[in-house]
Length: 271
Length: 271
Image 1 (tube, chains in turn blue, yellow):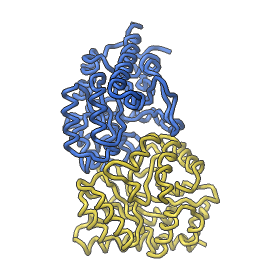
Image 2 (cartoon, chains in turn brown, purple):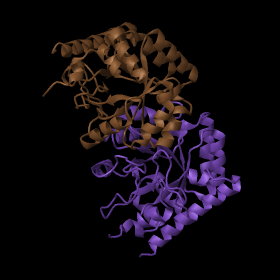
Image 3 (tube, chains in turn purple, blue):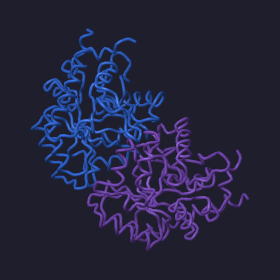
Image 4 (cartoon, helix red, strand yellow):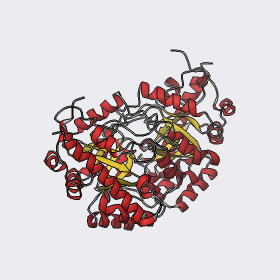
């Protein structure tokens, strides 16, 4: 299999390929912190979220949230999240997986209890409802300099984001242009055409576990970054769920950061 | 084209076909109120939601919400919604379109600001992430007597829920059984095999408009209920968005109820 040219470039050299300010910032942080690690913080109170972020913040380029599982979410909490993202130098990625028609996602992104567009640098959407979902989200997010990932593939067992579906996701991104859509959630380099440079972010990464009881499946950082050519590894329970308190979590985040970066350097070494 | 046997049965006679208590209740209300109308309430404050419901409540079998677009959502508001659903005799359908892996949707359904499972009789999910999404939601909703619809098709232009995707959605529902999954969001009778009786609910219904600028497409109640054999019509802005205040909205809801019911009686008359 031929090597995708984008995987032979440094993150730094790719900054100029991206017109979107959030995409640029992601690549800048990755280079600066030598980190392609995103920690997914799936805990259910604001204090727990902030605690995990303080522990892992130094090691990550990105923090992934599910604001709708936080029982005491407030906009003050969101402000604190934004403050921490500046202090600790990471991008906030609300993993909302928008999946409705354009008119509805416009409201879901901008309004409600969560007002996601006001604090989240990056969010994602399923291409399933058609191009109207991108237009709707873009009408809110693009003027704010936000960015969108499309889910081209998923990590869970028996998912339907495969084959023709994935191709259609790619096409929808190309048709939308690169001003707001900056990349994909995918398990590998879905942007096979030579000249393309999309950010590929990959969930389901773990060094130990092979899966959970509800269909999640795990691969190692090396499999994801070196073998599959993805840009950002997303790790959740594998880091914040480890036993041993603050020091253990910090150490585990560092271990994943190192593993991810090593796999990236290994892929550059093929030059 | 042969007529689907389920479309020749009365809603009342179908009650015994459904093991799920919420599905039974939907069919009972439909028969009692002579209504196959669901109003989708896509407004952004709690007061507006309650106002729309008080206006349309007498005419509907179901109210569809997007709790995450309501800026001042509280659990007290949700309690009032539940109280109104009993007083005015309708089922609450939170149109959440869950679309994540099993572990995440379990939390999104039960936790967070919205605690959807505590007040919503019915919700829906995309089959996209694979069967783990049903297992996850079922672990929360089934013990509470809640029900789930899978999105087998969508109403928006260029959507990818077609062909093999729709078939896989059907298969996933069959594999899950009928204790928690009670039907589909679809544009027609996707349950083609003869013995099946699923509830088919259909968005994108309007008597006047043909679409919006973000890809939504509309069909009439007769096209949806008589021609396509669907069970519940979902109407949004076409009813609550009409000019003329309370009386105009009430009247428009009645007009849709009558159109939907007439189409249902017309389909029964083919017996």
